[in-house]
Length: 245
Image 1 (cartoon, rainbow, N blue to C red):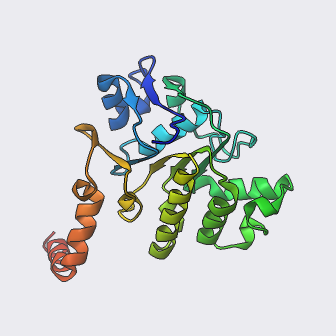
Image 2 (cartoon, rainbow, N blue to C red; image 1 turned 90 degrees about the vertical axis):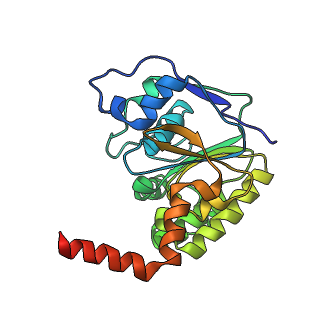
């Protein structure tokens, strides 16, 4: 096992009941389970929209002194301050300290690309040209291939949103490269391609808890497999039920 820069985290104080984050399934379950311990270099959080996985990753990133909208510790900008207060209630513990770190979140990646251009940062670090001069998916991969150096903590929030299936497979190669360079990756995703990475822990967040699951028992895998294996039947049932409604 390589370095785990964040070894565990926990809710160090109760989230106020009148806060919307108190209603998120992940926050409710963390309040019940106590501390959460990371065990592997790659950890995936999966679950339906609204379960709180992105909010959790944002809080872990902010507690790691990363910019809430994305970037490294040296990125200091705020296009629109929409981050939650969860970071105020979470404490993280580290077993060692990383040499590199980056928070990559799909929804605010445009803002990160603009910041790089505005501050005239060395574009060689980002693939040799402005991220705005590449497609969304190309810029994602260029950033990871060129800026993620290893020996680092990398927090990725739904990176698949910009990537084709083929590019997601390319991202698997980059994840493996970073693991071999003593990195820890914490990833929120809906992608059954990314969660296929071997030797990763996959935690599914739902009303029942934050549950460690085998790859082939995750809802993302099961729904995708069922749809691809019996597409015509599922579409027929969906459209028939819509007509009856």
